[in-house]
Figure: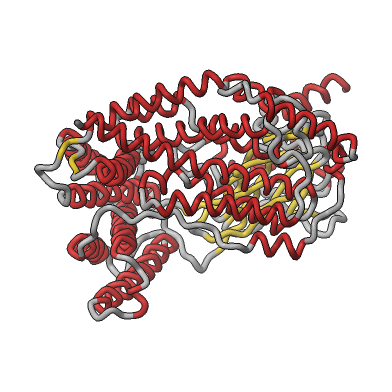
Length: 192
Length: 441
C-alpha cells in the first residue's frame, strides 16, 4: 500500500505544517535553533460514550492498563468488548470495530469525570513517530441536573489517518478548560 | 546618509584586515570571558525612564468603582441553587473569593486615610485600577449567575452596549485636545487615547451572545465583563478629561502637523538607508561577523524596521493625534540612530574583540548618555529613550547568562545601540517640542 501510506502522510503533514524538520529558524540575531516537525492532525473523527453504570469498553489483552489503547488490528479488537445496551453504545462499538486498519487506527481512552462535566478532544498533534492528544473538560449546561458527588465513565474513540505501526504509544494530557469554548459547538465532535 | 567618511572607512577597512591577519577572525570561537567579572558589569544600575502620570486620581473615582462592585456582588446570592450542582458551587466559590477581596481592599482603603503601611504602597492610580478590575469581575460573576438562572436577555446586553458606544462617540466629538502647553498636551492625551482604545476593544461585539445562555454562563459572564470594563474605562477617561482646562489651547492641529512633518523628515532618512534596511548586514562595507558591530547593526535595523511608515500612517488615520506624535518621534529616532550606527560601523567603531575594561566602559557610556537625556527632565526625551534603556537591560541579562565571545558581542551591540540612541532621542525630543510649538503659533 505504498501510495496509500504516502497519501496518509501527506494528509497529516501537508499545508498545515508549522515547522519543517531540520530547518533552522532565525530570530533577530539570536542563535539559530533546530525545531522538530510538529503538525496538527485535523482529519480525525471522534465518537464518545458516556456511561453512568458500567464501563464504555472492557479490555482483556496483555497490556498493563486499558485506560489508553491503540487499536490497530483485528487482534486488538479481539481483546476488547463493548456494551450493547442502546444505540449510543452500539455506535461506539461499531465505530471502533469498523475502522479500516489498513489505513487508519483508533486511539481509545477511558476516563472518569464528574457527572456535571463533559470531556472533549481538544487537539491531536503529530511528531515523527509519535502522536500527542489533548483532551479537555467542560462544564455541562447549568440547567442539567447533576451532582458533584457522582462520577461517570467516558469512552473516547479517536480515529486517526495513520496505521498503528506509524507511531508509538501516544501521549495524552487533559486540560481543565476547552480553549475553543467560544463560538458555535462543533456537533460532529460533541463531547461526552 | 553620509557616505563620504572616507578616512574612517579606510581606517575601518585597514583595521578589519589587520584583525583578520592577527587571527581575530576566529574570535567567534575564541576564549570565553570571565563569568564573575561579566556578572559584575551586568549588575550595574539600569536607568529608570518612567514618567509621572499626567492626571490626579481623586478618591471619588475609586469610590465610584467600589460602590458599583459591591452593588453587583449583592445581586449574586451567597447560596446558589441550580440543577447543575458544579456550576452552583463554582459561582458560590467565586462570589466568596471576590467578596473577601472586596472587603479586604475596602478595609485597606479605609485605613489608608490614616496611611496604613499596606495601602500606602499602592498609588491612587493603582487603587483605581484594582477597583475597576473588582467592578468588572463582579459584573462578570453577576452575568454568569444570571445566565445560569436564565435571567438575562441578548437584547438587554445589546442595548446597554449601544448606549456606551454612543457615550464614546460623544466623548470623541468633544475631545479637543486642550492643555496648557504642547508637551503636557501630548502626554495627557496619550493617556486618554489609550483609554479610548480599551473602550473600543471592549465594545467589539465578540463573541456573539450564545443561543442558550444556560449552556454557556461563562461566555455570557465574559460578555458582561467586557461591557462593564468599557463603561468603567470611559467613565474614568471622562473624569481625567475634566481635569484639563476648558480655556486651554486645542493642540489637535499642532499634533497632526507635527506628526506629518516628522513623518516626512523620517521618510527622507529612510530612503537614504534603504539598502541597509532591505539587505541587512550584507549592505555594510566589510565583514562584521564575529564582532559587536554585527549585533549593533542588527539591533538598530530591527528597531528602525519596527517603526514603519505604514504603522505611523495607521496612527494618523485612526485620529490618535498624540499617539501619532509619539510614534513619529520614535520612528525619527530609530532611523536617525540607524544612520549614525551605519556611519560608525563603516568608520571602524567596535570592530574587534572587546577587553573586559572596554566592555565595562562601553556600558558606562551607554548609561551615562541615557542619564544625560533623562536629566533634561523632558517627557518626550524620557519616552524616546526607552529603547536604549531596554537594550541596556537586555544586554546586561545576556552578560549574566553567557560568557562566550558571541554572547558578549551581542550584549556589547546592545550597549553600543543605547550609547548612540540616547543622544538621538534627546535631539528628536527637542525637535518634537519645537515643531509642536511652531505649529501651535
